Image (cartoon, rainbow, N blue to C red; front, side, top):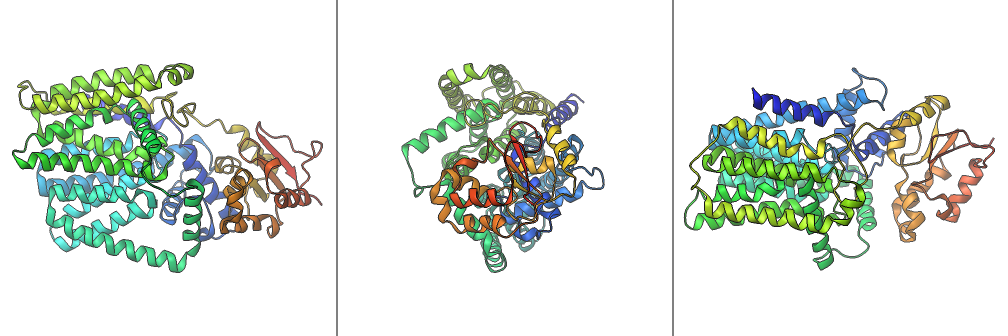
Length: 539
């Protein structure tokens, strides 16, 4: 009963925050361009086609329950929809792991994985990297659940393809899924790997043939993020180490995972222990690859790392009774420290980030070494429900109301909670819900205001970045985005987010087209919330 209450409490706390800005960005783009008559397949929201399909499906699913796009009820309904999907995936994972490895491992690994996916930090939840972790869990379950080998391989390959389809940079997470399948059943893993290659090739051909702009956008986004060729650089490795430590402060489960992996490995003997260590290191390293490859080191890039860490801790608690007391004791100590640290004021966090991050990373290493030498020597054990409570406790710090999105890295000043967009919703009502507009805003504003737009770039990323990065103006996406000013002339108002779109620094042709179509003089502007400028169209 205590374990059930702990899990329920953690889920309720995680559900209190609204969807993060990146998710609302995608929703806002799909909603406003869709209402403006733009074909779904032509809308750009900085996300691949598979992710757009998922977001559109969840958005359509909430319509019978709530009508208004930007509201607390909308966000809660979409969360609950997603929870249903996660529960279904975890159920399949449980069935698959139980069939090939027994009930204890299935209950521990699948249960912890499900908790980590549902009680996910708000910045992780429904991000492409988080969706990739869900698809990876689906791949493991699909590979192991069917009795027929060919059917498991077919289904696992399709699920692993989704890992790549929702975001190209998350393809290492598909390799993690195949690695986990190999730990459980090497023959199934080999066939699943072959199936994955075929599914990915089919998806590539279909998208390349029927959605060529998806590949143009992918190439231009890669050019936007990386101005130089990717490689192994000392500065990037340092940033990765800092980001890992930052993620561990928010999600203490990352500190416990190395020790849990060591406890599992120590159950083996001889050379199998070293093979197990290599598998554990490779698995965790591959979950870090998306963050390194994207080079931005945002906290949600480590979503699969947190999920894998939880699964490993759950497996260790289930299979290593002698490890339960050290795991619970370490979980309590590290989590209490995290709860204190994330509540510190921003100046303190920024001033002490280096020693705190080093302390967490060294703590993870020390716990792993202790697990190696003390494994099997602790005779006292604990009942399994204590593990549920401990894992829930480690997942709570980043989901509490008011907790920061990051300890000291990017978005350290963003906090969990409700979205204060009531004034923007009211703006949409004053303009008229069916009045067409042109947005020069981040997609969260589109989601709140809700007015339709006929531009297929509802949040004009290329014009916005072109204002500060002149090299972007040579990309095909920039020229296509510019057509929203040269060809779409039905907008009654221009909405500019002044702290996101730098209008004075825009290209001369962009400024000229805006001046030609809209009157942005102070006398003509429509009263708007802070950081928004609303200009009426010229007669």
